[in-house]
Length: 430
Image (cartoon, rainbow, N blue to C red; front, side, top):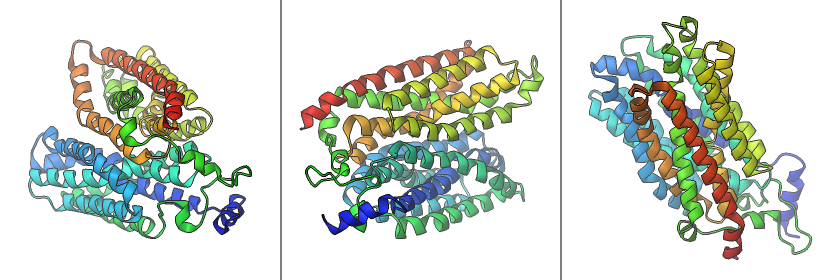
């Protein structure tokens, strides 16, 4: 048995370097990802009012950010599969941090658009690729749990930093500038030590086997060997399963954006149910709590069965929509519905990468998932506008809920189809 194998085996019963990789992933999601994505909303009103422009004019930067993410994802996937992740992820953190600091210096609205593009390029590998890529490389056990745990910190980071950022913004007429500056510095100082000094591409770089790997007594290999098998990107992208998963990614992203309108839904009852309208902020918080907890639960379920994870997440989403739609007058029921909808929201960044891994394997995972994620990133740029039109139509919020259920039905069908193709694809790759 090799020395690296002995060392790996000795770490299985205690501390494994993979835990530091998980900590690094948490730093990435809790700091740059949460600060730029989960805290964006607190800046919309103060910045647009400062420059005297409609909110839509300022928030266009966020659409540009999402488009930049979409366009840069294939490039990011190739870079991450070929080069040292310390370099790629550190450069991404620098782009996000400097883009955020740049927002604090903007004197014209168009300058925000440039900063948004810079942050979008940096954010693409961080929010979509870093966690599943690193966890897939470093773990053969509890992959779903670790992915879910790490991604939960995008929501936890929002809970931590939204109040802090709001307090800074309210400190003066240009408090938003200081908030952007502080957020940018936190992203750089809090994340770069992990991406530079801790992250490694694979356990082999540290002379280890992946977390949970055991020596295979029959052929001298390891459990990690099977996990590294799969389908290359060029083959995967020609399959029906790949297109099914891109549809899943796009539609689940469209569905998750309903979350942004739950507070507006509660406010719509201001004349008939003023107590519900007054609780609009609590309803949004309930959905955020469901998202954070749901990511961990989905990860645990996926470690046992990806199909079970799909059914659980979508069932929670449908139940949540029905509760909010038909029992809006009872606040605890409305909160329960929002919480359950938060679980299906969590599927976007947990279920999607785990489905890709389950169907196509880990061989060329980063390149395949980067292309699947392009559709989700594109949908992020247009989803809010789509739902705004739906809500403003004669169908209003009921139509939004009906279309949400339709979205989840499509996601169920595409996920089950892709999973059904798994064995045939794996057999063809041998």
